[in-house]
Each structure stands twice: as C-alpha cells, then as structure tokens.
Image (cartoon, rainbow, N blue to C red; front, side, top):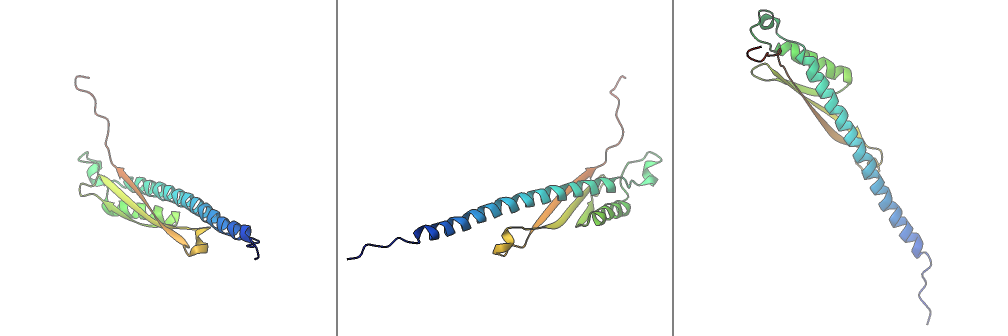
Length: 141
C-alpha cells in the first residue's frame, strides 16, 4: 500500500487564507472610506444649511417683527452651495421659517470591494440650521 500524498496541501491553504485576508482588508478600507464620505456629506449639508440660514426675510427682520428665513432665498443659497460642492440634495424650510434642513445624497466609489461587484456605496449626509435672534438680558439688569 502507498501512503497518502500531502504535496500541495499548504498551497491550497495559503490561497484560501489570502483570499479571506484580502476580503477583510477590503471591508476595512472601504468601510473606512464610506465613513469618511459620510463625514464629508454631513459637513457639506451643515455648511449648506448655514449658507441658506443667511437668507433672512428683510421685510420681517428690519422692522423687528421676526427673524425668519426667506424660504425661496434660503433654498437657492443652500442649493447653490451643494452645486459648488458637487453633490445633490434636498433643502426644506420649517413652517415657522426658523429651521433649515439639508440632506445630501452622494456615493463612495469602492477600492477593494469593486473586485466582488460592489462598485459604489450610497452615502447620505444631514445638516440643520436653526435661526436664533439676539441676546436676552436677565430681568432686573
């Protein structure tokens, strides 16, 4: 009888381990990349909301009636900021005109996961600006 031949067994083991390690590296690299892309999308959304929040309604602000955003101007300013940043998104103004909310939709192009068919991942960012007005002095001051 002939003994069992184990030649080549380590090569198969190394191939399997190499593929598994590359998959783990891919998930770590592309997962981190998506987190960075999400942080960027959040930052863009916050800055767009701030830009839109600068478009206050002068008809109410100048006489001192209220400090609220001009909805059309706020949307235009925030959308212009999004366009300059190269992303798409949506801008909403609250009913009372004091809160501007921006949502950014973009994608992260994968580096390692594209090998297994995942070419990109969706990324969403959120930002909000709330108008506050003046400083209130304490009573009796």
